Length: 316
Ligand code: SF4
Image 1 (cartoon, rainbow, N blue to C red):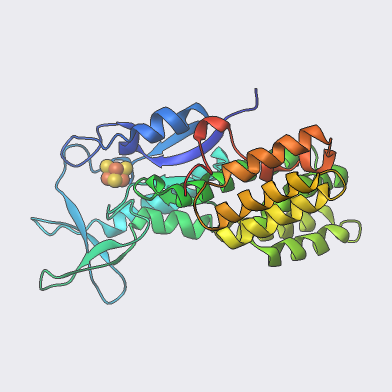
Image 2: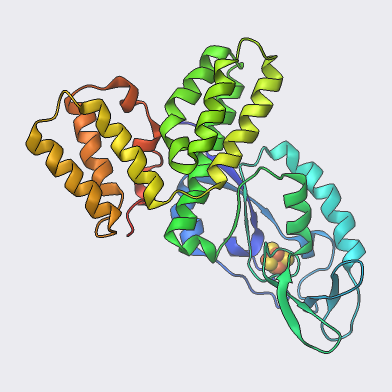
């Protein structure tokens, strides 16, 4: 069995009692469902920088040179302490080879976006980023990041997990050598997945792969990985998926009977109208891939991108 995907996570989401009041924020979807495929590397910025449990609650306060991390009641400023720790911690985390991070929402240390910043008059705007989350995203700009609350949105969850699994496969490919043959195979198997996120990147990556013999391999890998992660960051849409489904259907031009073609087009149209989830046309296409033996399509991650237990592509 391949090694699990390694993912950084705000420690309280795993049930660790590290919150200011000694509590936790266990998220069972994360621990029980994702936990089957993921090895978590817990990080609690406030405890790891030495603030202890319990501790006074903190929030972000607006200041001319950027928000400060300040205790709510006594007004102690912990910004420098947390930032000094965060800068060291992100360098240590390089060793872990993380494929991404799940942050605890709304936290002045761990929140990824829309964290409240208070002004002197007690007013708050939701424009902040937790201090550790900001440092992490600056240090690892290409890594997929999400918050636990957003993972309950099926579309955002799917996008995040697709990026994690693809990055893991890319790293596993690099760990083999890397050799041009393996890199080209990686690209070939991900073509339709990339197309479903960004037809533009699909073209750019195709051009890059065509030049693989002319570019030094380390430079090729760097450029390929950057474009790949940029592509997958763009969300799939119904229109992009319909485009890919019709493209796949083109491979069966000579195999399908008129009645089969009509049925497949009807199903794709029902998906387009949002009556049925993407998994339905995908399942039918997978049936034809097996029936008519299409090795190129059989190898496509688009048709089988994640472990089935995650029940993705199942929403309308
Ligand atoms: S939100 Fe972040 S800082 Fe707060 S308890 Fe959780 S991991 Fe620790």
